[in-house]
Length: 94
Image (tube, rainbow, N blue to C red; front, top):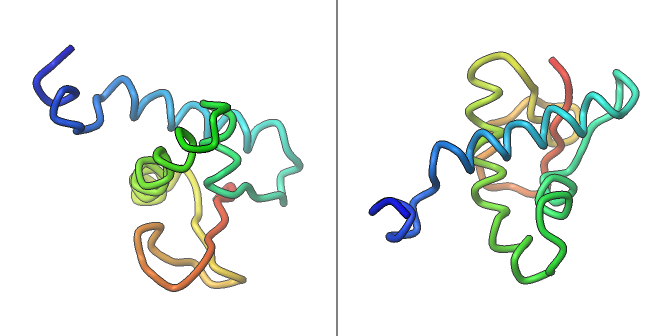
């Protein structure tokens, strides 16, 4: 285990796993469909406490993917920063 992982910082491997889960869930849905960050977290870990703890990392990776143009993050019909406050977000294809 790296020093970063021991300190609680996400590893590049974990970020890649989260990004892969986001993109796989989107690919499995209709092109116009969206997913909730909790869908991603639940797909990765079954335990409620564990998936809830993963939510900040899912939002962070979704923000990175949005910056890269690989996904859009929306609140209602408005595109937003995945890390912004203001309520639930959805992740969708660009």
